[in-house]
Image 1 (cartoon, one colour):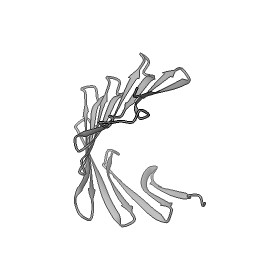
Image 2: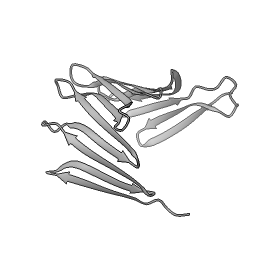
Image 3: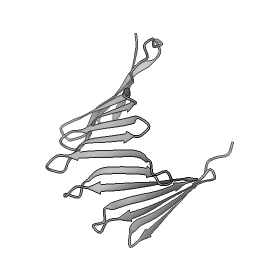
Image 4: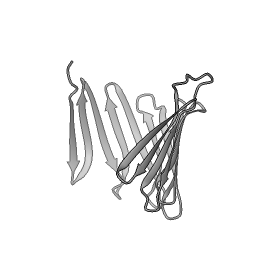
Length: 178
């Protein structure tokens, strides 16, 4: 069995990334980056095989990226739209990533900008939910990943997994149906 080889080249102009090229398993992917005058990313043009995409970034008056939209360059159809909200101090509060195929990822953040909950849907059906808890210093102390179970689950199917972080010790506790 042969091993996969990935070659990635990066190109910079005045210290700013302008292009990447990746070759893996006879597949070439090129990304070309453009920037606004203030140095913030304006867009990325992606070519992978015969597919071409363009991602645009939009900012509010405080230079926070509030929206990101990717389109298929050939068909002009939207692939996804990401919308972010921020509080008055500039800390992210929420992130909504909506794909045109019906997938949706909703993320919520605490006052420190740490991810506290992420829910993934496909056409209004929840696929998974992950919740994170932090201590007073901002260190993650617990995360729980939950999968909705089918109507008639097998006794061995896992419905959730809780990870507890104690200093450098990590404990993983899968929860099974009884």
